[in-house]
Length: 130
Length: 235
Ligand code: SF4
Ligand code: FES
Image 1 (cartoon, chains in turn green, blue):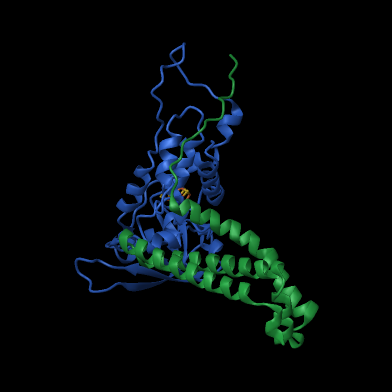
Image 2: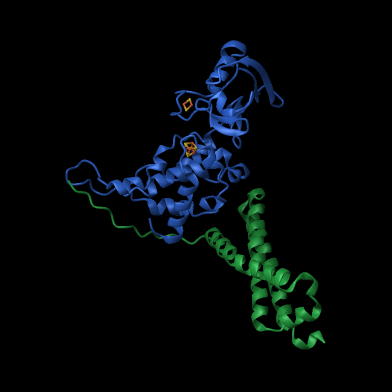
């Protein structure tokens, strides 16, 4: 008797926040590799720590590309870290309601700091260096 | 060889706190740790409480912490431990009932929560006998059929130590066994059960489970396959 393999089954999965958080952790982790290494190589190797002056920083931050680069670096690194902190809290907070409150606070902190950082970076213009 | 055996003792009905009893004994390097505990029970102190049944690594009843790592006492030889000091403690993360016996109920409750049995309400095949599958289909869950529910994995997991409602590696292994079985029809239900904070997302790939499993099941791989099935919506 011959047996044929069953067709792959399509499954309906209800979305869950922890699934999204887990994915975000992977994606931000992958993105952080080029972002953080790019930053480190540029500042510490190409330019060198002793050459980093206010003028240099202002000049670099005057370009939109670098502004976006740094905003991404800040938002992703901070988000990745905050999600890690959230997981650590989860080990100690077992009540789902309390955990939801703590998660929301962490999210707001992340959002506020990232937005303040983005505004600051966007506000830098070449005139500030002189 | 001469060894020093330290055994965790605690009777919650009598003792204020746990203690360790120490025994010096002459043993064969090929003795199993279970044999040492049997010597203690026979020659020193018959009140020592432990679970064991088959003594051949198949029933899963004697998982315990030996020199800080989870093993089946009947499967680990004295010489495997590379030490003349052996400390035996109950599994971590579960309540001690007496000495080396822990309350396995939270573990089994998590196990039951993933529906660890074949679900298929379709009519039987024409010959009224077996539901057939190809060798490749069988291979997909071969590894996870080997579980003996000893709890060595789940009680080695830091996520489980912090919260025993986390289903734990053993439950995910047993869900995997049916999710990827072509004859089963409840993968969707199981994946939705596992797609929760206390489901697969509590796993942070610490790999303790894989190291602890006496059946050498690739547990972390199985968990990753379940995560993948949830994310892709395909089994
Ligand atoms: S997966 Fe391995 S360690 Fe975990 S319960 Fe099954 S046999 Fe024991
Ligand atoms: S006594 Fe059965 S597995 Fe060790």
